[in-house]
Image (cartoon, rainbow, N blue to C red; front, side, top):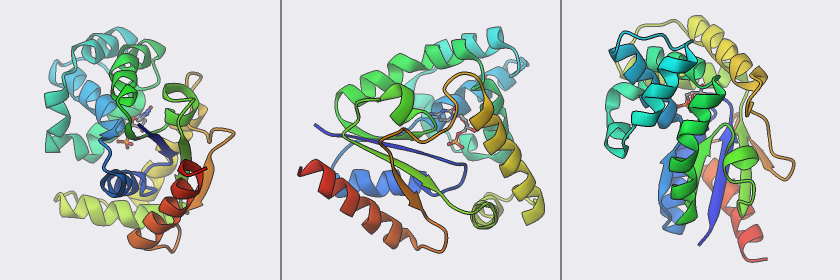
Length: 207
Ligand code: DC
């Protein structure tokens, strides 16, 4: 029963890698960003304020697994709202058990604080990033596919704002765990990223 923790910057490819590793090792996969996105959506749907800890915590406590597959969660505005709602310590605490219960069965989890806070004893910790320009290009292609019409420069500006908020918040900021293996995916194909990660995981898991 292995736990693979993946953290990394926005649009670094950690979700694609997480799904790939889960399929490779036959493990369940959890995109923990969806919990914060679903929380933000609940707050917005209720006419609340994502900068309010009270609104965010009420929403986080009400999340069910069914909500996580709603395709609207992938939209840019919900992602930005998720970054804002995730700043509140009480929101993070309300989502902690869901993630811990999932990890207790073994699996691949990706997010911002998996190796540092949620699964500090994970068997393998990966930290994934890529240059801001490449991440902006990837995210732009993805958003265009959802029908959103932002320029690459706008996406780049949002990405820098998001990374800054996620990595400078007081509680569980985005940062590599001390024992994380770093993967810079700039210039790498999806297959190359997966192969690099599998090599790291195989080396650690068979030790
Ligand atoms: O990975 P994502 O873009 O779906 O995440 C959306 C936001 O949720 C991200 O900007 C910060 C927050 N988040 C977090 O704080 N901790 C996690 N483990 C996952 C996401």
